[in-house]
Length: 132
Image (tube, rainbow, N blue to C red; front, side):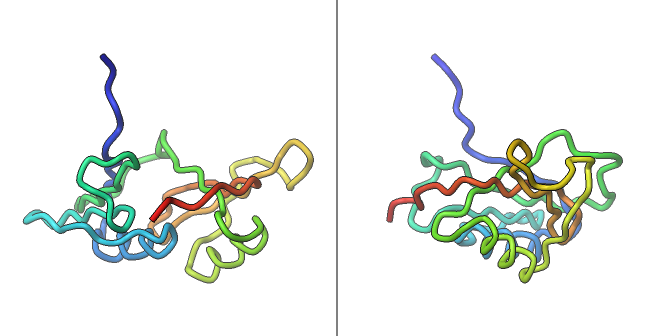
C-alpha cells in the first residue's frame, strides 16, 4: 500500500483573501470554510479526496520565519508561458530573484510570489486542463 496526497496546507495571515487569489489563478472554487477560518479550494466538481489535491489555507497569527521548503510549480493550460506570466502579474503576483538568473535554454521558469510572499514557479511547458 501507498499513501496519496489529498490536501496541501498553507499557513497564511488572510485565508479568505489568499484562497480567493489562488482560486482565480488555478480556476478552482472554494469548497468550504472551517470554524477556525481555514478555507479549502479545489477543482470545480471534484469529489472530496479526489484525484487532484485540494489546497487548504490555514490562518495563523505569526508569519512563517525564513524560506518555505515547499513551493508549487504551475504550468499554463491554454496559453503561452509569457501570456500566463502577464496574467499572474496582473492578478498581483510579484517576480522573485532567488538567484535563478535570466530565462535561457536551461533556465526556463519564472519564480514568483503570491500576495503573502509564498514563492511558486511558472514553468515553460503547457499541460492539458483538468477534465470537466
